[in-house]
Figure 1 (cartoon, rainbow, N blue to C red):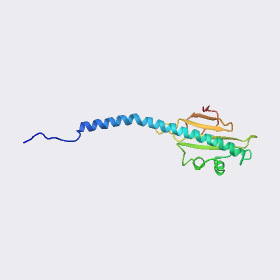
Figure 2 (spheres, rainbow, N blue to C red):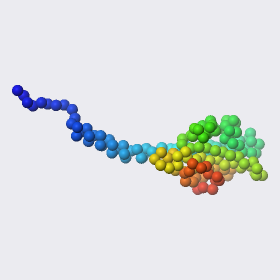
Figure 3 (tube, one colour):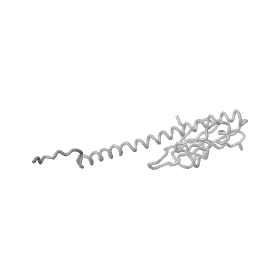
Figure 4 (tube, helix red, strand yellow):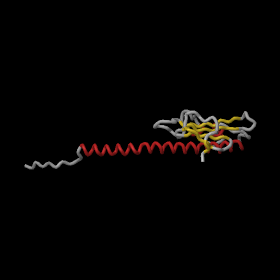
Length: 158
């Protein structure tokens, strides 16, 4: 009688070792993935603020008759898409809320466009900076907060 049984497959130790290696690799990869997502959200927000800045200049020179407009005005003229002008409080774009408020009470019309992070801190942070732009055309940034910037006095974006 042959007592040598040849068993096929992996032992429990080998399977546990593979699971541990996968766990270590994912622990290294997940933070980098989240950082890449935050960077992509910030890039999208910066691009959107620049789009709003261009749209405001176009609106002032055409339909606004020298005055700047709100995001709704810009959307109605076809200058920004609905992702920027829609119900931003319910559906942020790439982790950011956008505003564009026109101030026509001054002799020279002004506006302030902002992009504020939905989640400014923690593991699920959507970005580390807020952005703003005004009639000067300069886009600035400040540390992330759910409160929109109230002026364009942050650090200029290069």
